[in-house]
Image (cartoon, rainbow, N blue to C red; front, side, top):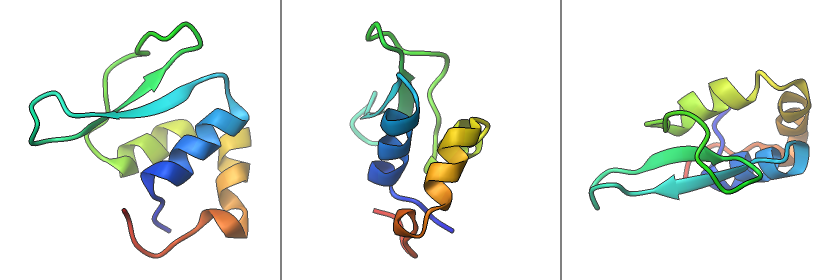
Length: 77
C-alpha cells in the first residue's frame, strides 16, 4: 500500500500530539519532518514518505488508523 503525505499527516495528527510537515531546504528536494506539540522539529527529517510510514507505524494507533480502508490509495501525490 502507498500513502500520500496528507494521509500520513492525518494519521499523525489524529493519533498523536505531533504534526507532519513537508519542507524544502533547497527548493529542489522535499523532506518530511515531525513537529512536536511545542512547534519544534523532533529528530532528523525523512527523505521519503516510505521512511515516514515505517517510523510512524511503530505507534500502534497510527498503524491501526492507516489500516482502515479509507486510508489507502494506489498512487502517491
